[in-house]
Image 1 (spheres, rainbow, N blue to C red):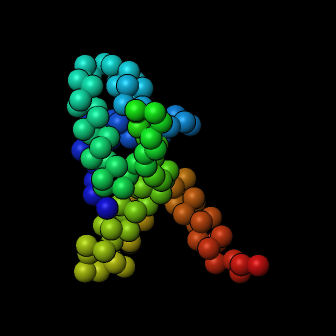
Image 2 (tube, helix red, strand yellow):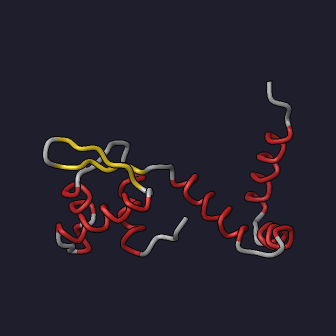
Length: 120
């Protein structure tokens, strides 16, 4: 999974914040402070679709775009890919855990407890 560039992240933030598929025009309006050309937003969304980061459905002559996965799932995939880049996954995980604050460590403990519970 590829990391997103600055503009791709901005577009994805718009899509993740909304609960409905958006057109290029909708995304462009949400990014009005960036003063982007319609074709720029269209190109970014097309590239994100080709990367599999967004899904799109045709509605009349326009495409409607939505995230292919939640922000949390996207970040999780990045973390998994990053772990695959290291020769020592245990050391990388230990370093990651050492970087956590108390509430993050507690959230990880809860997730591990849920993972260890038998599935019924």
